[in-house]
Length: 229
Image 1 (cartoon, helix red, strand yellow):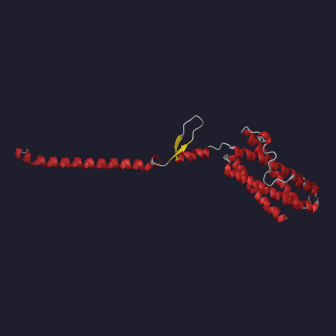
Image 2: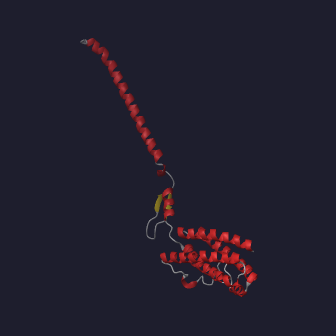
Image 3: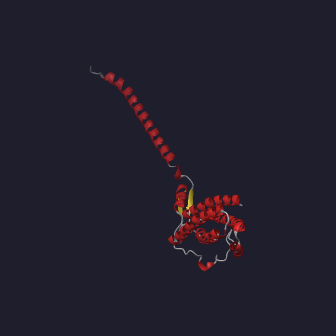
């Protein structure tokens, strides 16, 4: 039905108010949606405002600013050997070599079958460990002996003296068994001390694993030797 001019005048203001209300509501919904997006974005990226770590650059290079997570990842990935790792490998080779000298005396001098069996186990473990440490040094371009041999005469923990080795060579039977066990317990204690030190001071993962093996193996052997004594 046709709408009169009077009816048009009556309808138009109401329609206009409704239109404005709809537009206002739509604008409010849009504003809330945008605010929600911004809030969600901030919640998902806390690292942007998190603590940062300044990492010293290489010589001649600027320092780097990394997130705490990036710095931790970089530390875990960089296991470059340091001086403690290298010194440990070099000295432990010498330490193990003396253990092989001592175990080599057992077959002809020991009386106890258990001591002979234990000595064989020690030799079987430490021979390959020497090879592994020599291989590690070669891989990293290091000599198996310390440059200048500055550690050649430095006493290492647990090492038997020349006098003690002479007494061991001269002993036989039960006297040999007792002296061998006593010296080897001290020797193993020294190796564990060295391994514990490099785990705290070194940086290379492979050296740390070798040190873990020394601690586990020789702790068990010390317990057996004390039982035999």
